[in-house]
Every structure is written in structure tokens, then in C-alpha cells.
Length: 221
Image (cartoon, rainbow, N blue to C red; front, side, top):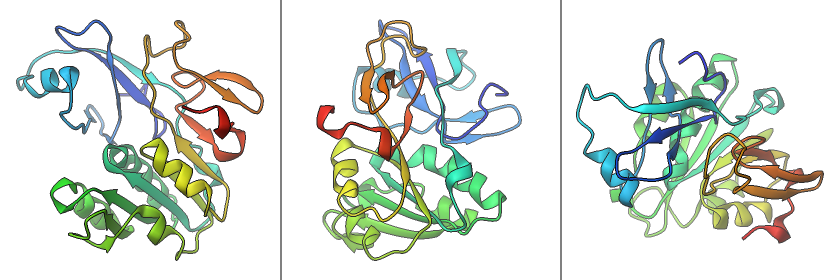
């Protein structure tokens, strides 16, 4: 696990029956293990759900550039949507270890989809939950909670629609962890290129984390 140095980095797993590896962000790092949290939605994650305890996996680790914690200030805000929540837990613990006062907004479709809320609370963060149907926490989206809060900086991981909505109300600088289809995971295939203010960059190599100011939002799909 020594190859994972900062929150926001990911691993690429070789899954039986899948041509391309599957990128999974790291949720938690232990002395000799990594915790990966994923949602079973397609061929790859369905195959992962069938992996037995003790089974050996072929994995590329320590991939990507993660979150820059030095920008956080004293009261950082973490915003996670659905499967974007896990890597923020790793980040949350790191920021708390640095003595920062962390607030987290976790967004889900409904209470049935919510997960890891208690883990953020137990870690010591101030936690707000938003659900689209109002079955848990605030009814609405993460932005409905975000616009009411004060914070020194923000970190976000989730769907692009969430990022676009955040851009309209964000009060400070921040960093987004982007999701993208990755052919190789280490910058060779150029399949995950992103247009930035300083030129084309690869989500898997120079990202997946980018500062909000460098993203050319008009060019994003």
C-alpha cells in the first residue's frame, strides 16, 4: 500500500472476463491493506461482487494525482455524490489528522442508497446528508446544503452534473475528482484527455483531481 500516498489516487483492477481494467478510488488505506468501495452496476463491478475472500487480484496501484491538502485552509468542505463518497472518506481522515475542522455533504438519491454516513461522523466530521426524495437529511441536492455553509476551500467527487451545479454557487477555490473511462490508467493510451486552461491533460495521469480554475467547462461532455 506504500504506493498510495494521498487521497484521491486510485487502483486499476484486472477483472476476469473484462478486456479493460476497472479504476476504483481508494476509500481507506491501512498498514497492509486498501479498502475499496464500489457500486454493482455493470459487467466489471458484477464480476467484482463475485470475488471470494482470499482470492488474489492483479492490480496496478498508486495511480493518478490526488487531492492537494495544502490548499484546504482550516474549515474545508467535502462534497460527495453517490459513488463519489468513498475517496472523500480517505481525504476526511487525513484533514482531521492535520487538525482541520471538516464539514462533509453527502448526496444520494434516497436513504436506501446512502452509505458511509456513520463513518464520516465517527471520524469527527460535521456531516450533512441530502437526498433527492427527502427520505434522509435535506430534501434536494448537495448544492442546496452547500449554499448555506461557510468554508475555506472545497473538495468534490461525484457526477459531472453535480460539479456543474456547484460551479454556480461555490464561494472559494476547490478541487474536483473527475470520472472518466480509462483505457490504461497510467497515461499511455491518451483515451481520457481533458482540455484545461494550460493545455490537454490526462485524467488518469495528471488527474483525476483538478483545480476548478483550470477546467475548461465548456469543453466537457
